[in-house]
Length: 234
Image 1 (cartoon, one colour):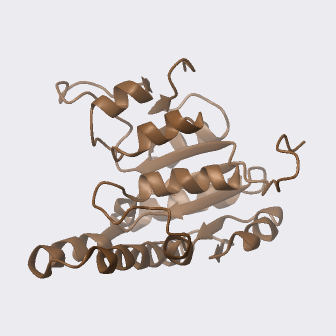
Image 2: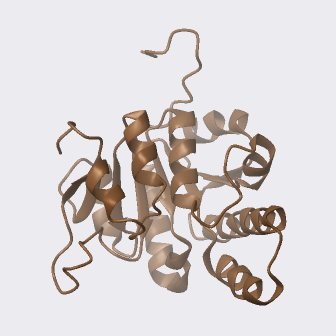
């Protein structure tokens, strides 16, 4: 039952932010895509892409050309669309979408819905034109918008570890306050306060380990770091 009376429930179970770095190993990216496609039969999945290699190139060129903030913003948003299009080819049966109205028909068919976010990022204009916010926090905003029951950031490391513990293991759980005090880690520094303000949790997982992603989606233990609002515990 939709708890928000009068507001539409998009029916999204899981929104995962796909770190663009995951496209560096296409074989593992394909394994991830195949895993998400298989799980989409029982979990309604939306993939929100990061900028990936194209975004890295934009940042490299910016060091010389110093793009105006609006141009940089639009370039990076278009890079996210490119990552989404590329990943969709590795995710059997998936469909891409740009407008929220297109989501429900895709996930109701048991397919992965891969977002091409450029149109909404630019059109909605809710994100600052700055280096401080990245696709991590943008993905969280859309997870909240779609009412996703669970939210994860898939990157190339299995979570967050404290800066002083370079040789130590990754944390299993972290409050938004503690994560925010650490600044930018494997997530951007805008994400912890956004999670806190909206009562959301986020799990950071190694997207190169498709079994970890599958276990997390199935509610089983998986190596990763869950960032939770203060007082929410694990």
